Structures are given as C-alpha cells and as structure tokens.
Length: 200
Ligand SMILES: [Zn+2]
Image 1 (cartoon, rainbow, N blue to C red):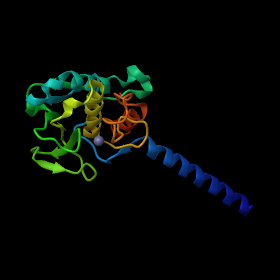
Image 2 (image 1 turned 180 degrees about the vertical axis):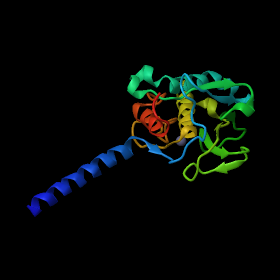
Image 3 (image 1 turned 60 degrees about the horizontal axis):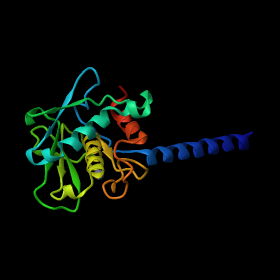
Image 4 (image 1 turned 45 degrees about the vertical axis):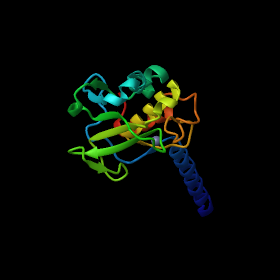
C-alpha cells in the first residue's frame, strides 16, 4: 500500500517536472507588464509613435504592429490577443515609441522601459512600466525588409512584456540574424501575451 502511493507521487512529480519545463521553453516573461495594458480589441486603444528618423521604416513598423493585432487571423481564435494599438503623431499620447539611434551599437534594435515621467528607467524584471522605447540601430537599414520587420516585431514583444525565448520564437535573441522565416509572432509568443493580458 505504502509503496504504491509513493510510486504515484513520483509519477505526479515527474509529470509536473515535464509540463513545467515544456512551458518554460515555450515563452519567457519578465514577470511584469505595461501598467495600462496593450489596449483591448473593440474596447480601448493604446497609441504608438514613430520618431522622425525612424519614419523611413514606417511600412515595416506598421505591418509589425498590424501582425501583432491579427494573430487570430493567422492561427485561429485560440490565439487571439487583446492587442489594439493605433499610430499617433502626438508623442505625449504614446505608450510605445520607435526611434532611430544616431550611432552604431552592437545590437540591431533595443527596448528600454520607463514609468511616470518617462525619464524613470525601470528594469522590466523588477516592476511594471507605463511606456516602452524602441531604438533602431544607426545601420538598421543593412537588414532585409523581412528581418527589419522581424526585429521591430520582436522589440514590440519586449515592450509588451515578453523576454527572450530559446525556441522557434519571434523572441529568439538572434531573430534579426538567423531566422529568415520568422517575421511575426509565433503561437508560443501569442500564448505569452495571453498569459499576461488575457485573450480578446
Ligand atoms: Zn531582444
């Protein structure tokens, strides 16, 4: 009797371990989020803003955002998100800004998070944020259109709370270098967003 029970417990523990590690490899979260959310499809909207230098890439930026808002079209309603953003020309309305960096850095694009006055930087692993800033590197134009779109969509994922994932994900840290075939959120990336903000 005793022996049987302990076997069951071990099996249960094994299952917890397996499902736990499967989930970890699917998407990674910072554990915090945009204070005011990502909009709510059909109900409320958030705004994003493109700085002067980045407007060359408006096509890629707008398509990347549109893809984030259309995940149910690509993958079905189980993969819907509440994401609802509109472009604004008024920077103060924006909760997600995209700028072009003036210098060449070691990255193709970078996201930083802020709260309150937008001058207060926060570490996304430690607290929620009100505003995300995406900076495209000075030599961003060297990437192909598809990789530029992928890199922008990846940074938008960071702004919304997704950390780097090691699987076949938009959130792979090498997305702009290695994966020509991934140009928008994959199913696991969508599940990550849903785990933070819920579905549509
Ligand atoms: Zn990244």
